Amino acid sequence: AQSVTQLDSHVSVSEGTPVLLRCNYSSSYSPSLFWYVQHPNKGLQLLLKYTSAATLVKGINGFEAEFKKSETSFHLTKPSAHMSDAAEYFCVVSAPIGASGTYKYIFGTGTRLKVLA
Amino acid sequence: DVKVTQSSRYLVKRTGEKVFLECVQDMDHENMFWYRQDPGLGLRLIYFSYDVKMKEKGDIPEGYSVSREKKERFSLILESASTNQTSMYLCASSFDRGGNTIYFGEGSWLTVV
Image 1 (cartoon, chains in turn brown, cyan):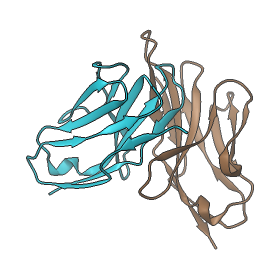
Image 2: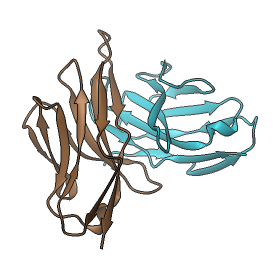
Image 3: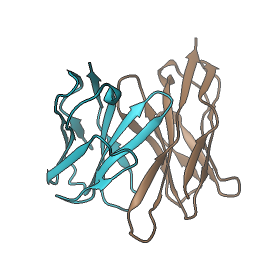
């Protein structure tokens, strides 16, 4: 069975300091992995995705994530937080449902990032 | 740019009313989805559709139905709204069934009183 665990429900950082949002996954197949960001009262916007090419994936707004198969992790990082990064972040895995060829998306419960001035 | 449009951003409905939430995508995507999002529960899949007139139940289909008469449009229907259906509803689409990037609309906030 596939699952996603976001290890922190809330993270607070000071502006200009690094950001680390942690995600672990479980999948019986080679998964595709995504990070999305949601600002208040908005939909989810894609930050980056991993689809079995390079293990270090660069996304928008200076974010990147590293796929580590041995640790089943896909942590999101940014070297220097900006006030505009304050939002909720979701780790998502897509994996096939049985033999149907249809994929399902499994969402983590989200990490709320607070950026302190 | 990819665009998923949810026509109603904020709605207030009375218990027992029939509610329609409309979603349109302009990317010729095969797959479309409806999720609801609640604090502490994350996103939960209500229904999805991988083709016109096709629909599949998600994790929480009870109290909902859907309609997909055209490829670009996917409607969520609450036959008889109840207060426990007060939530944020998110529509999404993806190119095909192969687990590609999923694109979201801005969301519809529904309050049932």
